[in-house]
Image (cartoon, rainbow, N blue to C red; front, side):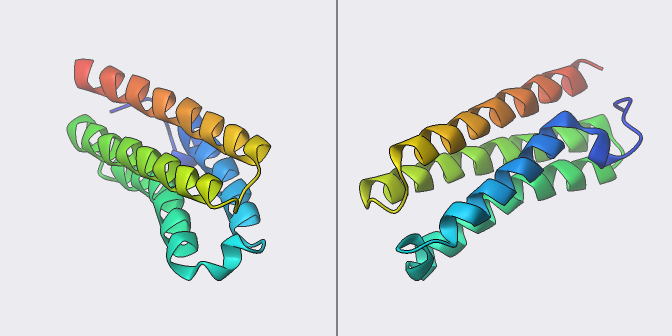
Amino acid sequence: MASFQRFEDIKAWQKARELNKAIYGVTSSDPFSRDFGLRDQTQRAAVSIMANIAEGFGRRSNREFANFLVIAHGSAAETQSHLYIASDLNYISESDFEKLYGMLDEISRMVMALNLHLRKT
């Protein structure tokens, strides 16, 4: 098992937590907040990143943890896709898009690096 004592010690989880604060911030502003479907789906996808890192850690096996990290990676890509829609509809500014997309890219790289490490051990 990875050398983490708690899921809160995982940097990718910490970054995902920061991301969620930012996602909830931009989705709570009009006009994004009024598009209930896109708002909710974007929030759920972002929350899924954090939740799958934690759940995978809780499974207590490297193999299962690695599988949940793949799911977290997929949720990051889903969130990025939702951001494109929000940007296309002018729900978020270009700077918010770049910031959030960059955060998701960093989290994705961290998650996959941890996944590779777990699969090698």
